[in-house]
Image 1: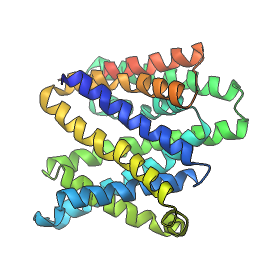
Image 2 (image 1 turned 60 degrees about the vertical axis):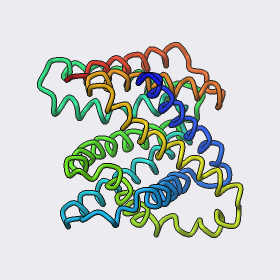
Image 3 (image 1 turned 180 degrees about the vertical axis):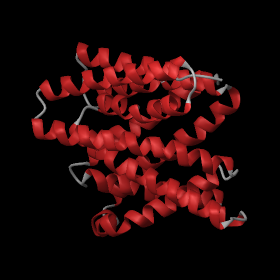
Length: 276
């Protein structure tokens, strides 16, 4: 299968999982769904990778644990955001995080221009959201949550690079998810009394974990082996559009023209960050 098509499958799987998660918010609070996604993905990855077979230094374990805690926080606040905002809008605004990292770490004019273009898109999307039919309180909570998710995504990229640099790869992800699940367990562990006896709910949460965490990560690794980082960065620009498509088809969240303009600006900013 061609790498771009694999990437599209990865994006569709990722946001299909998010759409399933949105459908569960009536049965389980959004942040709890985010925690269960991390917990169940950790179980799947640990069973698959068996990271205890690897020789870990204390430094590598600490880096993987910090990485996982930031990843878990990103999931929790992102699900709070999509509980209050359309999926496509939330995904586009969240991309402010990686674009900001590219702008800070990059040396070319493209990265500097990208942050300005992304900021313009985010301001447009935020303005449209506040002026839409969404209750103002929901809009404010959703925008605050997605900006927190963007900040977490920036930290995820920085910490993830350290984990990858240590050669841990998916083993590091497995250890990190275990750490993230444990750190947030005191806040959401009590939901086990609701989730565990409800087998259909538990199975849906497992679908969310596999679709939104396990499959996209593995497919991204396959794609990165076939294409350069510059090409991969350009393909990332497809993700806001993918989220809009899933939101429109599955959740009936049809974007307005101003929202499409904001999404186009964010996608353009992502493409500008592409470099070899």
